[in-house]
Each structure stands twice: as structure tokens, then as C-alpha cells.
Amino acid sequence: MLPDASNYDELTSRFAWDIPDRFNMGVAVCDRWAEQEPDREALVYVEEGGDTERYSYADLKRLSNQLANLLVSRGVQPGDRIGVLLPQRLETAVAHIAALKLGAITIPLFTLFGEEALEYRLQNSGAKVVVTDAGGAAKLDQLRDRLPELTTVFCVDGETGSALDLASSMAGHQDEFSAFDTSADDPAIIIYTSGTTGQPKGALHGHRVLLGHLPGVEMSHDFLGQPGDRIWTPADWAWIGGLLDVLMPALYLGVPVVACRFGKFTAEAAFQLLQDQKIRNTFLPPTALKMMRQVPDPEDRWQLNLRSVASGGETLGAELIDWGRKTFGLTINEFYGQTECNMIVSSCSRIMEAHPGIMGRAVPGHQVAIVTDTGEELPIDTLGNIAVKRPDPVMFLGYWNNPEATQKKFAGDWLLTGDTGMRDKDGWLRFVGRDDDVITSSGYRIGPGEIEDCLIKHPAVAMAGVVGKPDEHRTEIVKAYVVLKEDVDATDELAKEIANFVKTRLAAHEYPREVTFVDALPLTTTGKVIRRELRARAEQEN
Image (cartoon, rainbow, N blue to C red):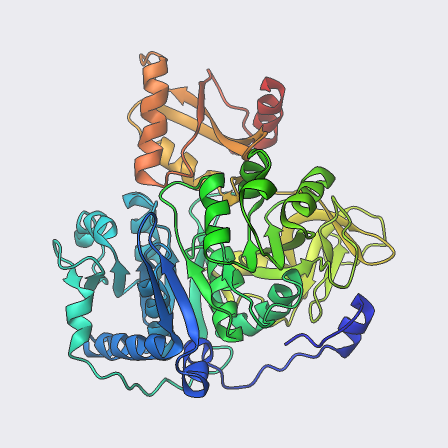
């Protein structure tokens, strides 16, 4: 989508959106290439410590058509919601493509979610079908009686409990399917995003969100789609960073995607994969880069052939940029966005010098500014809200079944990201901080509200406040301040039990790594926790 250019001004002046009225994401990332070059490599699945399997666009088309026909036979109609509870693997891509082809709405779900987190998302979305593995099927078996709209669960590991075997269920269905004629604005994906109060909100995106992502993805990878490009990310495809920053755009551009989700991410395994799979492009979250930086002399131990490295989620400093140049032989490109409106700011070493500590410039096609709370644009070098103007093809349609929250996201035609920043005279945008309470830990954005709601369900907990505590390796860790019920003794064992209570019910990345018992929490006159006071206390503890 990006025109070729030698500098940023040329790039922006030559760019124009080309969003057709009718557009289907599933067809665009699969069938288009399958018809032109059926044998073209689309997906490479690397089993940790095991075999490597390769799949063409023709394979993706055949399998997604079979699954689409299967879903229709189970009563799935356009607009129905399909949960995809899987790690990086072939069936994850196939499930999304199939559902999108038939006009259904997919819900990417993280495999580390506990029962409570899954129950909320599936109940809130009214999901009709879930495609998962044996681990996910076991969790869903505990929830089925509380999810009346969930009619069918397919398991990629074979029949188990109430889940049906996906492969044998697909086997009898035709490999031809006439895709539903979707408009670019028809709903396609719900991605649940962390909120500062209460439960997560489902950001609903239209089919056009893929096209909206392309300029930012191409820019952050020095014009992705060059001959020989081949991409991998450790970011899970359940998040927007894995699904819409890597998998879907790469398939659309004809760039092979390497799928490998390590049981536990290690820097050595990442370097080895980059070498063995001849990766040319990679999105490495800042936490992954920090872990990889701890490995001594990687440039002497592995033969890398990277063309682009992109990173986002937090600002990289000069030290990490310099390390990247030494290790990878290139400049790491930073990008910025959020689930509701992603890939809107980026750097691009091919056409402009990196400014460490400054995230980049507005990606062509996106109007990004610094505004007041009421939507007035602020002068250069003035602190304010980072905002994006609508209409914008990458911008969400709204929060699922939550028009009030959708309305609060905007000040006039400006979508407020919830982050503060500044813009200099040349248009470079600097991230300063968040004006909300979302916690950034190991690349994940975590809402304290859902954790607090979970904590107070523990029989010993009366009240809880959750904040991010600064951490050298993870950016922040989840820190919980807990008021116990009367006659409950505060012990180290109880703190561990409470942390594990959250870990098993929500997700492994959301549990509080530190639990501190307090006599009282700072509260507003209306009884809300004053998290800024807890954050200040957490910072002083370091």
C-alpha cells in the first residue's frame, strides 16, 4: 500500500488510501494468493524441539473453506461470534480465515486465560463456537453450563470431553466455499482490551482494519513485502500485536509467516529460531529485546540475516537502539498504537534517522495530534493527549455492546488514546505517559479493574487496589495492595495463595507478583481507589 519513497515527506505526499466498498479480510489474506500462486509458501509451523511443517496458500484456502462449510452446517451465520483459543499454529490462522469468509466475527483468546477471564469474554460476546486445543477444551468444559449461547467446541487435539474433533469434523466437507459479500465496515474481529475500571471492553473492528494496518506495518519493517521477506514474532496471535501487526498483514502481502510459540520464551531459543528459519523480519516486543540483550556476544554465536526489526509497546532508549545495531546490523524501528486504533505512529530507518526516546512520526494516512481533553489541537512542544482523528480505516467501530464507553473514547472527532505526549516542530511524537491506570508488563497491557474484581472474590479479601510497580526487566509488575477481612491473619502463605487465586482465574501474565497487606486504601469521596497514591507508594518501594 505504501508508495516507494526516499524520505518521509515524499512518502506522505504520495500516499492515498484505497479502501474498497466491499472487502473481506479472509478472502484478501488467503484466496487472492491461492488463485495467483497456489504453491506460494504462506505459513511455516515450527514445533518447539520438533518438526517443521510448511503450508501453501492453496492449503490455507482448502482448509479454511472446509472449516467455513463445517461452521455453516453447525448453524453459524454472518454476524455470529467465533472464539479462537489457540497458540501460534496452522489451525489458528485457518479458524480466523474461515470465520471471516462466512461473515462471522472472530474473538482471539489467549491460551493462558483462566476460567473466569474466558467466561467473561465468551459470555459478553455471546460466542456460538470456540476452536481450541485440549487445554482450552478442559477449561471450557467447566464453563459450558454458564455459557448458554456456546453451542459447539472444536478441539484440534481430538475429541475430548464435550469438544468435537476438528479434523474429523472438517473431513467430510467440501473445499470450495462462496465467501459472504462483506462491506469494508462490516464487523470482523472483537479484541478485548484492558480497562481501568471493571471488566475488559471488546474493541470491535471492521474488515477494513487490515487495510488500515498496512501502512504502519510496512513502514515499521522498512517497506515489508520485499523479495525474500519472512516474518516471525514471539507475540501471541491472540493479541492485536501478533494477529494484525504480523499474521494477517504478512499473509496479505505474500510474506511467509513462521509460527512458533515457545512454551517459555528464552533469548537463546529466539536467536536460534531467527537463524534456523532464516527470518528476515521480526516484531520483538521491548521485553523480548531486553531479555535478548542479556545474552553475551550473540553476533558471534548466531548467523542472523535480518532485514527489519520492529518493536512497540513502550519507548526504546538509546542503549537498546545501539545494542540492536551491533547485534542485528540494523536500526530497530519503533511503532505506536493501541487495540482501538493501532499502528498510527512509526519510525522507518530506510527513510529517516532514528530518534531514541521518540517513537516516530505519524504513519501516512493517519492524522495524529496532541489535543486537550475537549479536542482542541495544542501547539508544538506542549504536553497533551495523543489523539487520532476520525474517520480512519484502522480505527475501531466501537466497543461491543457498550456505546457509553465508545462515546467516552472521543472528544469530538478525536479518538483519545489515553496516553499523553508531545509533538515537535518536525512532527516527531514523543510518548510521555499514560493518563489512565493501565499496567504495561512484559509487553502486555493489563487493566487493574479486572484483577481487583477477581481479588475481592477471595474469601479473605475485603478490598484491593492494583497498580503497576516499576521493574527493570518487565517495565512494570502487577502489584496488589490488599485489605483483609476481620480476624484474618496476614501471612506470606496467604499472599502466595491470593496471587495464585488470580493466576488460575484470570491469566498467568495478570496475577500480582507482589501482594502487600494494608489496613486501608486511599479512596475518593465516592469510594473509588486513588491509584495514583498507590503508584507513588510502589515507586518508593524500589
